[in-house]
Length: 197
Image 1 (cartoon, helix red, strand yellow):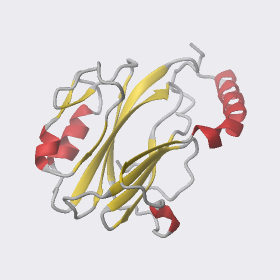
Image 2 (spheres, one colour; image 1 turned 60 degrees about the vertical axis):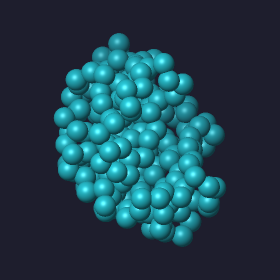
Image 3 (cartoon, one colour; image 1 turned 120 degrees about the vertical axis):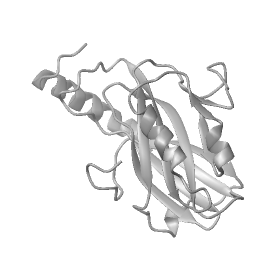
């Protein structure tokens, strides 16, 4: 484990510098529904969203949908459009942030909002944040970014955690036509103020 000191910060900066060239080729995109052009080409990002981010210090999937266990092929990626969908979500372990995720689901008005759940491995020295959300009719575009965590957080460059993001945003539809979920390295778009969820 690298101590949280100036040397740790230099190591992180060096690692970030080495990975910058590869970021363009490392962006992930998950699409659902029919193929459509990215909404960001014509629609401005919205700051009207809420997010609960839950971090599991064990590198294991911990969000369940319909009791699906860790034997499933991939980490959970699910868009919830009804209360019944939200009721199918459970957690394999009680960790910090799980109550916030449950509250977000419980307080969601699914007649006016949807919630996208995105679970993924993230480097121990990186956070997971919402970069932007755009909504255009019956489709949405959601992008995550992974900035460095604060220098006083002890972490190892070689270790990974599993992080789940529950992102609620306004979208009045029961019939989702398409969506795109991406994950890049830097946080460049307008985001919510510091201190908001």
